[in-house]
Image (cartoon, rainbow, N blue to C red):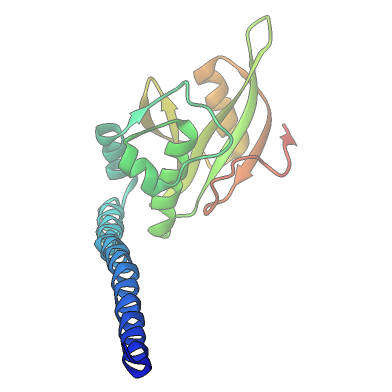
Length: 201
C-alpha cells in the first residue's frame, strides 16, 4: 500500500476513534443532565409548601383560632424539652413538637398579625425536695387585654392576666404549686431560647 493511502487511512481511523470517544463521553453527560432536570420540580413543591404555610398563618388572626388550630392539628410532646425550637414551618409539617416548638409557632403567628408578643421562660422549684425546672409561656396583648398561652395536659390554653409580670408569676405559681425564682424574655424571630440573662424575682 502506498504512503498516501496509508496516511489517509490513518487520518480516517483517528477521526473514527475520536467520534466514538465523543459519543461515549457525551452520552452519560446527557444522562446526568436529565437527572438534574428531574429534580427541578422540587422548587415548585417548596413554593407550594410556602404558600400553604402562609395561607394557614393568614387564617389564624386571633388567639382563639390559633389555640384551636394547634390543639386540633398538633401533638404536644411534654417529654420533648429543648433550648432550641424547630421552625414554625417544620412544626406544621411534622404535626408534633415540644413546648418550645409550640411557643415559637404561636409567637410567629401572633407577630405576623402585629400582636405585641414574646416568650417568657422561667425557672421554678416544686415541693420539699426543691425539684427544679424551666417552663415556657407566650404573652401577648389582644383587644387591650393582656393574655398568655400556657401548655398543660397536652393542650394549648389561654388565660388573661393583669399585665404585671408579678401577677402573671403568681398565677403560674398557683397553677403549678411551685415557686418561680428567675425569668427571662425571648423576642420573636429566634429559634434559640437560651436567654442572654436570667432575672431574679
